[in-house]
Image 1 (cartoon, rainbow, N blue to C red):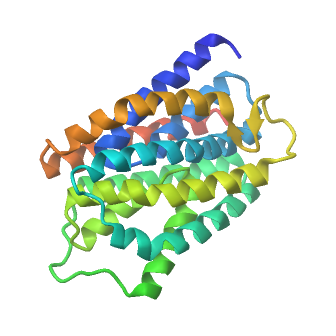
Image 2 (cartoon, rainbow, N blue to C red):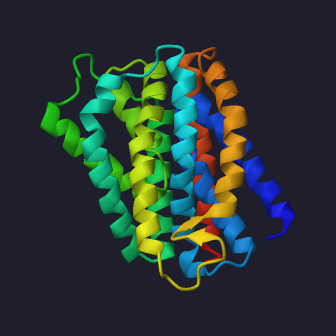
Amino acid sequence: MDVIWWGIYLAMGLLVGFFAGLLGIGGGMILVSLMVMMFGTQGFPPDRIVHLALGTSLASIVFTSIASVRAHQVHGAVRWDIVRQVTVGLVLGTLLGTLVAEQLQSKYLAIFFVIFVYYSALNMFLDMKPGPTRQFPGPAGMQVGGGLVGVLSALVGAGGGVITIPLMTLCNVPMRQCVGTSAALGIPIALAGTVGFIATGIGKDHLPPLSLGYVYLPALAGIVIGTFVTVPFGARVAHALPVTTLKKVFAAIMFIVASRMLWSLYEM
């Protein structure tokens, strides 16, 4: 692989690391769109591009989320009680999602990604206010909800922030706690998703060299190194900005990501 691609993946990690710290997301929604574009430019097989982007994105989120959680924990912004209640559901749902993704063609995965991100970004941008008495469901409801989040996260290659942040705000969790807790929820999602995409990709043909299943190791290395540099800075900015600004930034980035992926559909 040309050395220039190492630099590109490192730059992607620097960018995504900042937003991971800022918004409590693992950066997956941004990474998937960027990697689809980069993998296409590198000439990877079209029928494997989205799967590789999803698997590599989730693998990078393992490291990004850990760095983000450490940064937010300093500010006491992680609700570990929520994390404990949904972890089993998140893991099982994510593993199921990787199996579903394996059965879908890249084009259909991309279409699902675009629709989901537009919907999520619109809800966040409109700043929908929760009812004053809205609370979390009971233990069974939390596990079912975690399972659904896990499935969706695997299908869009994200750590769940784009889903869990709106859900937590709906249940009256303060925005800064949503950001920190979302980063923590990204860890079990990313671990399960990485295992699932490695397992379903092992032995598949047409994968590029240096791939472990559907995880492209050169991209993973560059992204992880970059994110560790910028995650702490993003977390500091998150605790200095107004809550409404955080929501607008989150929504704007999601619109941009979805639009780029929509454009890429014409090339598939």
